[in-house]
Length: 341
View (cartoon, rainbow, N blue to C red):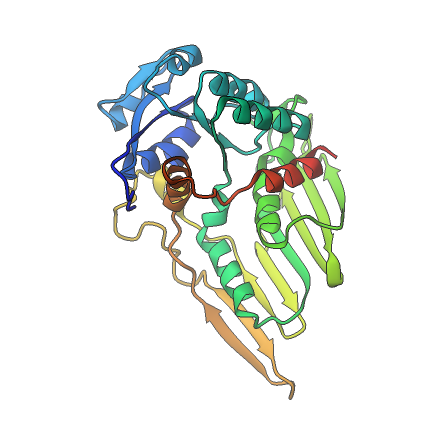
């Protein structure tokens, strides 16, 4: 990325589990405008294997007390986001916070006020806006080929029929369960396009044996002109359905979830490697339109290359150049109000 500035922002990660290793460190390291200085690792010290010059602090307080660190990535468990965000802001740091930003809209508003008081910025890590499959959806919508929209479905399914080991996801505590895990991804994608719904209806389910939290949800979001959007997620889907189904008066678009970035980074692939972010052949979306004579036309819609680097560039440009970050406070509050309702 072209930083258009000589300013380097020193950053730190509050954890180096899967999210730190896959979703944050590679991009902070790849962007010329950031210096990834430190991580927090309470026991296992693994980050140095990937980044030989990195500092590994044993506590969050140690990292927050590092005066060189300007940006802190809050990638701790969901129920700790509010606490750790508040602590970082009070130490005079900008923060990039994973989803869900907080458990409640009240917590979010308190942090917004604090950030304004200390003159620091809050950035929301909604990386799925930059998935290759979602870029295809936006491309089709921008083309106008579907005509007036009427019915839209977004799904994010998995098959995990046992209770997982992560307490913050599986115990009945603040911001736990599938709704707070995958709901922020789906809701942010919808809100980024359509804004605040006129009304919505939410259903939760508990289907796995001995589950203490929801492992299914569906939310219907209703917009003006009879545009109805459905977001659904389940942990018990053996054969996933299409992730994006859009219907309009002139046609339909169907696309499966196909972004490969997480899988590639987990496998050790680098952002600079050939093929990074490129969906496999056969994963393209299908746009079917019908003309006034009733004749159908099928069109394969290729996806853009997926990359989360633009998210980090947006953080950089907001800090250095004062540019507007694409995920707004208002959008996050809409999301949280739906999640907590």
